[in-house]
Image 1 (cartoon, rainbow, N blue to C red):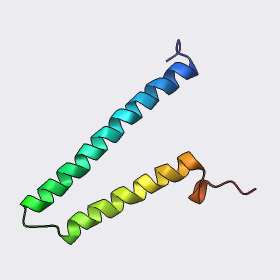
Image 2: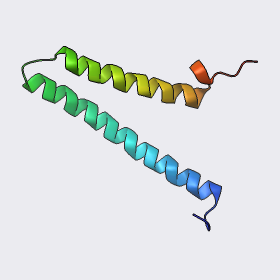
Image 3: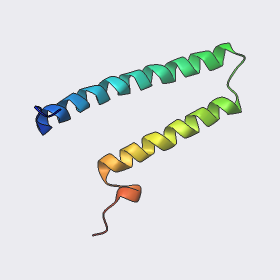
Length: 73
């Protein structure tokens, strides 16, 4: 990391985030398919999504400067 620039590192992280978002989308589809196959959706699966949503909303707030990341102007 010593010989890298901030821009290069930033771009690498951007690419990894894009890949991770695609994996998350595929994971959500798999979660839904598995729930459907195992006798229908249940409250445990809803709980999974509640936790995932909470994490994603925190990330969204950080990126947009909203929620707890909002600047008091």
